[in-house]
Length: 181
Image (cartoon, rainbow, N blue to C red; front, side, top):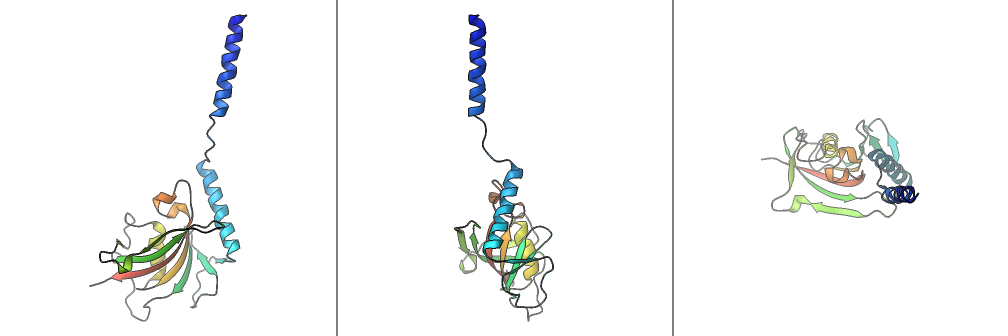
């Protein structure tokens, strides 16, 4: 009888221990759902209109963002040096000036980087996805010209790796400059 009591007691303690140590972390699917809800909430709070066809007229109507097939939300603010016939080509060196911010109710600036004015600017090669996130390459393709400006809402799947877990969407105010000889 005493032996059965000890076995039952050990079972009860181990069961309690199991439930006490249950991992409360979200699954990746739950993180992605929370991320989608945060993006939707940000869009609603900012009264953003999302379109599936990129506007052809400029300037774009207020608060209109194009949502691409990859999930990037893109808004062209300034076309840049579009009167020149030189549009950005693959393998050209791009430097960025950007403000990166969270999409929460109290938006936090995550970092501000002004690489254009640095003596040794950080740069990436347009088309080389090992040097910048997919979203930035896609945005540069839409921006097309030197000194173009855009606003982005970037889901974690196409953003920088440090925002992938937990899945964190990020906003950017982005200006590009092409380094040409």
